[in-house]
Image (cartoon, rainbow, N blue to C red; front, side):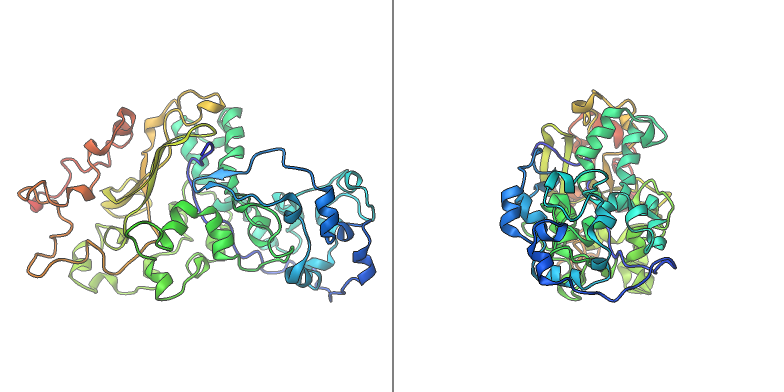
Length: 450
């Protein structure tokens, strides 16, 4: 793939319906008459006439979006804007359906001239300016949008800034801003990308005939963006892996753990998603873990939960944004290392994932080499969504010690369990060795293991 996101992140935004602002007035829906829809000289008249849309649609001028999960599926331009089906009927009879097309999209109604209809202040995606499009009724959500990782992608932006030796993304060259919008922003969504449309990386266009979804669909919205990491792990798509136990035994969707506040943010800007105090934690549901068994008693303060309860997960690396893409293609692996974010997570050791960053990631956009690349690791703290109670590390053969599946035992052939840990020898490039020098386990594993 030619365009790969620098770092995928995360679910697309959720739950647009919040506390109604005092200036928002609920109305009783009035269904438009049949003749109104039959005329092709209005917004509704054109967009409910499928044959007319096919005739008038312009071909795409840009190729489909691409991301870590590959190229977006192609959906015909006229299918993306067609108002039809039960979703459209629900929309017409809703409060949103009574607002009127031009109130959100601008342009000119009551004309059959496409250019005229889409002239003046026409806005294709109103929620790209959420304050104007959504703020009157959803003020409590919109006021926090600057702190939304889904809307803003602060984690990605901060990572690039750190590697460029800058304090903020705003200080970076114009080329990186352009590259970010063309690539990374494909998955960082506005309100409409989750609640009205398919995300661009999912093909774009209206989802369910313009019906507003209070809760986005896990597969068609969330996993459209979170394909290679979130969805791939949660649904057990990797060879030899199983679906997450929260799916198979509890039937959880994304919003069962990632609630409205977590997704929309609290207005504060966090450098990474792990800084946020709104994140879900295993302890939210699993109380008393410290004394649950001997493993927990020994390690609850030293190891993050995923070290024991995750399976193999997707990794890739050395991305050439807008060019070759990932030059270390996606592969399944499992690596434990020293915790790279001790200020955010208290554990001594953590599960790590190889990420896409490389010194020349932005060379297609005028930056041949990031000036302070080694300031940030390329194996990052990770929390794969592929949890199992019993894994290769929580099970041991009869008669074996409890640590037989996880401790590195130097006296065993080939240093038993060594493959689980990130050693310097696992790093294939000099810049990887420098960037990750503090998190490899060389000479840092407990002496007691000997």
